[in-house]
Amino acid sequence: MTTPSPPPWTLDGFREGAWTILPLMPGLAAFAMAFGTVAVRKGFHLVDALAMSATVYAGVAQLVVLETWPDRLTPPVIGGIVLVTALISSRFLLIGASLRPWLGAQPAAKMYPALFFLVEPNWLMSMRYRAAGGRDPAYLLGGGVVIYIVWVAATAAGYGLGVSIGDPHAFGLDLVMPAFFVAMLISLWRGARASVGWLIGGAAAVATDYLFGGMWYLIVGALAGSVAGGFIDDRK
Amino acid sequence: MIASDPAGFFLLLAAMTLVVYLTRAGGFWLIGRVTIGRRLQKILEALPGAVIAATIAPILLHGGPAALLALVAAAVAMLIVRNDFAAVVAGVAVAAAARAAGL
Picture: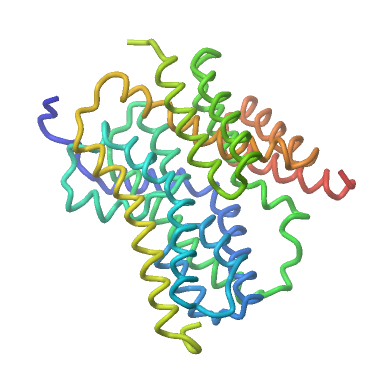
């Protein structure tokens, strides 16, 4: 467990992380614009929508909360929204944990601010980068900062366009993230045996979705799939 | 919201921000309290695939033929071109075409 000196955060690593995430940005912008558009419908002012994107910075949670936006923000209503947010975000607990073997030796003063920018796209990119031998923590931050900027800017753009953007569903924009995930899954392919965990995770997610509805399927499927995958994997 | 109910909206944003940040930082922090053995390491290594599988499996099941075709197209594009952007473009284009065709 001795890691003499953790790899340094370099501008090159930051740039590489920022650069490799760029292809995904049109799709992410469309997602953020959808949020901005719904915000108009729910009676948000521009500053409200921007404040939420800039502070909460969690796409799925923001959209779910907005779709069920209440008429009045009473304490019980706020509590309910926070619980839903916690459930949807609980997968970040696992995602953050998976960074520990790589980044555990990094100084907390750098890691904890950087973790604010942790989302799935830069995490997946970083895990691939790491698997290919990359070590620079700034890679994760670079991707995260680009995503953050695009997320907030595109929220404003979507708000400005309002309802005139049309139906994102018709343009297939709801499938941007799933398509990216499929591409990442193919990058992660290490043979049929290692992917049994994926099947178990997928099956657990589908079963949870069927039985309980809501957003539980994300965390249950992720847990089941990673535990199963971890026990199936017998490589050294 | 800020105009009509500043206190409520501020409270909500603060609570949501805190909760989301605690999940982002909390998993990283918590697992730093334990020794990561070989098995736990393997479980963590299996996580990216598991998160993806859990996200897309319900979409494959409930998304209808357009979503299914789109994700197959993304997979095929990725296998051939080995490029994230090409895969996303292929997926979205096929979804739009399939929906335009009424699927």
